[in-house]
Image (cartoon, rainbow, N blue to C red; front, side, top):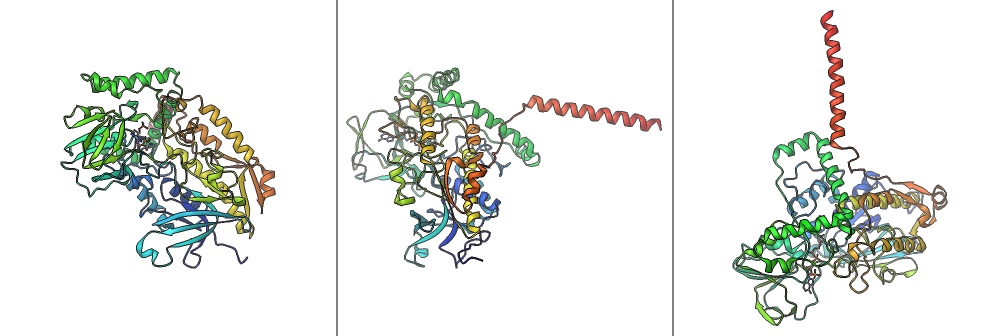
Length: 571
Ligand code: NA7
């Protein structure tokens, strides 16, 4: 056996603590999915580096009051781990985190995770064809075992940090001067007692509309600072009764059908959300206007302030039934004046100061700074930040030119406005593991393989992508969103098509997209394609067709039985 040969089927232990075949950054939905896909190929020599103290990623970070998902739970879950026990159509954060914890336990993923371990940098070494990932150990006791920092050598690095992991604080003058409590929604302090407090919330996006109704009844008074109104659709959440949960548990096919129909429905919304000229978009805008009108019938003043004046879909369309009515409460005020500054006492908007005990920053995430602040350096000393100086981009949102043996989940241009992100993440995970598989195969033969996308192919793909995106609602210059770069307006975050279209792109690795060098490279170049496959979830047959098939089968069966019984009775 070669000196350098790693036991790919053996988890990293004490002796090889700083050597792993694969390093996965982040123990959120993405990182866990990659780990499971590696295990399915019997690869166990990987580590998951997680800067937090638990698994769950965004579903561990975001635990503000009212936090829940705006995609149905039966769709917002792994296809390979359906959960028959969801208690609501749209589950809350705690239930989603519990689901993810359950999955991590089932696949015994905890043994692979190093918690309180923050990745500072990842550097590719051209001489050894390996990554060197340097981490800081954040946990007090753990840091005592070493100098608080160490480096792991690996053949492949996968980023599962996603787009929404760094809280964004607004650029408002005086933000550090406030004497009261200032809290970002993604760093909620549950030990803080809201009772009787004067509270401000800055922002009115997907996060704020969940917090506001939840806390309005607890606080003394609440002022909502809105810069831009959002399009809002009814949510219509409801509990899932236990008899239905039993059916999903004992007849999994029914749960699968439910998910397929949800997937199908969500895919059908794509055109309406991205094409402002489509009849579907007009219908959706009508539904939003009706929702606003119904909920605030006698308040044209509020309706006027809450009605957006840009294309539906330019920002994320919000789903809520209890946000608008909250403004009918005596203790809640909608402030649309421009925020001039934050003072020691509170917030000044349009020259008027209001004092607060607590200011909640529901101001989103640093979504366009993918992987920030991790310092990633690829081949020939080229940094990721230099490759992305004009904004994040990648091949299929997954691989980056000049950054070999590296894959990202929920990277540039993979966000969705219409469907469950987990569907995208699963496709990315399979694709990345197919790439890693080739690198690890070379490693198992005592060799090495270097894979990175061809710069020209990346350019060509992104030109087409940006051309498609420029025609969508996301590009409407009348609105800003976390989907695009502020100055250039380049859409760096969203995918331009349906989930199924994306899944099909990632269902195979076309080796002509890549520069490959090392052990087995010639074979890859000649074989051209590696089939990855995709999870086919959308419904392909209607309920009526299935009903007809079942009815026909029952009729045929009944006929046979009748004939046989007839014969038997003649004997
Ligand atoms: P978003 O959707 O980025 O919303 C941030 C909100 O904060 C939005 O209303 C912003 O107004 C507002 N904001 C940001 N900076 C300022 C300043 N300086 N002054 C006033 N208002 C400001 O973040 P969320 O956390 O709600 O949601 C992020 C995603 O997480 C969501 O789409 C889901 O996918 C999950 P603006 O609209 O820019 O005028």
